[in-house]
Length: 313
Ligand code: NAP
Image (cartoon, rainbow, N blue to C red; front, side, top):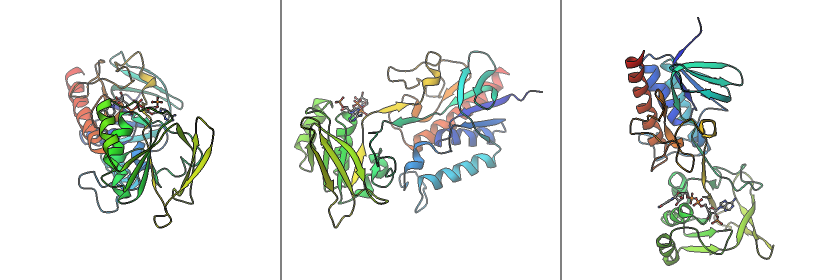
């Protein structure tokens, strides 16, 4: 007989793996479908010190490896596949992947969000080695170092202010000559003596052997290129990029209710507008996108899926 899973979890970051752990532990027939490798955004973080109970020297990948082991230990099955389309309206949900078609009584969407990248040479290679997309995660590693923040919106300016708690100097690199951030946020930033600005500028290259050592900045008005090197004694600096996020929810557009920016709308029980379909983690509308909140969402979604199946089938 055709296998119908109790729960199909799409995505295997902390939200998906936590959902897998809870679903497996509830003895539900569980599948976690992941696109590339397990982990999501957190595997790009070198050290994780703000997840409660994190062990010393925990890295993003080591934390995820333990989550994977735990979820699999409770029987959740993991499979690598790219989802091409979904049918969520019936009692049995159908998920069509490149390799296989999956059928499930409930679905947990845990596809996460991606920070928008600058897209310049060196950015990818030096991510987690000076380049970061999360001040809460990585700010403390730049205690008394210099830091550059890319962007001019609320996130960039607020995070720049947060980073002044650690860094001795924070330079906001913005592509125009005026910030997009709310005036009240701007005022605070202009008053902050540790914050400097590089206007009409964009980073066109990040250089370094295994760690960020210099950036090449282009003045958008004059076209002039300037290389900025890390202080010799420091050897490195931070480059924090906040030029917007993109929820990975394209697959569900027009089917699952979202806000204007593409984040999935749920209630406090992670329920979406569709019966039996839940969303957890960074892909949903929420105020704090961290491993701890994603894991909590996953746990809630899985227990709600269990309840839904008990009542429905
Ligand atoms: P955002 O408001 O979309 O701002 C993105 C910033 O990045 C803009 O300044 C933009 O420049 C710049 N940018 C975009 N693409 C770029 C590129 N390729 N290269 C260089 N710069 C680029 O994004 P956000 O700051 O992440 O905020 C997202 C949403 O969350 C907003 O609605 C914001 O109000 C909200 N938010 C609110 C708060 C708060 O209220 N406390 C805090 C954080 C976020 P331009 O200005 O030239 O377009």
